Image (cartoon, rainbow, N blue to C red; front, top):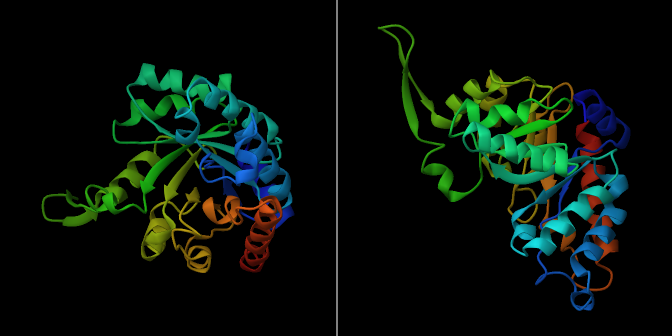
Length: 276
């Protein structure tokens, strides 16, 4: 999917909602758990219910890989069920030496019909480059995450030298953003920034003003859609705000799809206000 088409979908739907399909068989409604194709039936119902209110779906591959071959089959059927009007993300957090990343890229962009893959940048450019070589496909690189462990590396301060007399401190995540932004363009490269890191969004936009940001952590994790939108939106919106549990587990009963639709619609209504 091209950036232009994604922006057009955001404008048409007045939404920048990404629905996370982090489907856990132990959490889906009990009336579905005995179904022989429970995971796919759940996903299909969620997609049907939320399609008018979002522009993207993010499939967290761990929930599918944990089921072995059957899980991979469900993931492939799910991504094929999502129409091409919606941006399809494999949240796989891949990243390895170049020839291995090439195979990961083939898996998600050729064997399966994803538009983007989340990628860890810490093995350097050659580990990210293969994901950037597909026309109309995207690498979504981890920038600043919401988890407690972000303090272990991402928020460690470095000292960089700008000539012999000028030293300044920067966070490791800032170095990552500046470096990775040079490897691709705003047309094929996004960054993950956690919603609970709202105090950093203004600074992040000063470093990467034009790139799209995938922002998880709204809803169950407590991130504020208002803060994100006010601090991180750019002229093209530049945001895909992900909500997973808040949408797909809005109800544990037979009305789960209806309730998922209602929550997605609420997000869309609020996003419409911020897009004005």
